[in-house]
Image 1 (cartoon, rainbow, N blue to C red):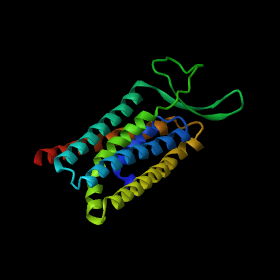
Image 2: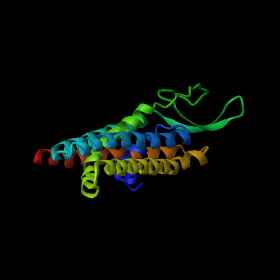
Image 3: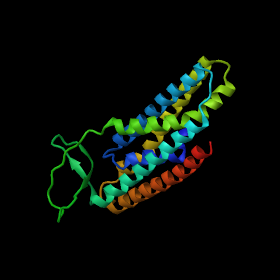
Image 4: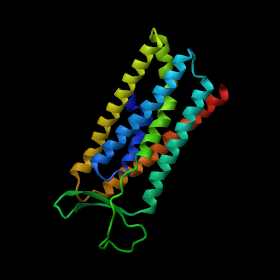
Length: 222
């Protein structure tokens, strides 16, 4: 669960939250990140344990570089969407009386008039893909720890599975916290949301640049 709270993990899931239109979507993003993270972590770790080897330091550095590039792209994506769209939040009510918050953008529209919108189903592929990349990059340190402390490959695989389940739970709980503003804000928070998204975008971009720099040095050094 603590592993889920690392800076690059929070940054990645926060960028996913900027696309979520409901608290449920935000929470689902976090859980799917955890699933993707666990899948690659378990697969990489199992292979290394079964062949009784250690992931090469150069490969680990290149995987970290991939995470850095991904964070740069995610941060730029948030910034680009904010620049492109004029975003606002309003409460939307369906014919059956169901109400929910709706995030809507008026890109290129001269006025805030009546509009139609479609509720697109959030793709699971984005959250899964981000989790998969993070799982690959995080596997090196975990595998080293597992090899040092477990008497057999079977125990090591159980260890990694429990670690993965903890990361899923941790990121899901974090996503619940991120989703709270969506639940309790109905109107008047456009500026607050924009400011929060700018913070997420810029922080993620900066963290990605720092990761790229550090991992590039490591890859070249090894």
